[in-house]
Image (cartoon, rainbow, N blue to C red; front, side):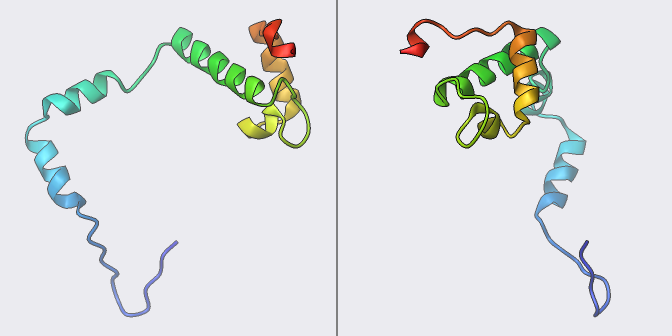
Length: 97
């Protein structure tokens, strides 16, 4: 929360001009960005799996503790273990060496 003791607080963030222009005519970039603003559930799950694999590889498949994949991802180790199991993610032979 921001408060002001000397009356109304006015901030010029340079957004008024951009907002008024966007209201007049959506650009091709705006339309393309709107089209790319979502992913399907299958794509989201795939991206999530890839992200978990990347964290596991960086942590050398260590899930728990300092430097573990759960810490890198900012989630509880039990949550990560559940997601690994649910997604059927397995360590490749090369990762163990």
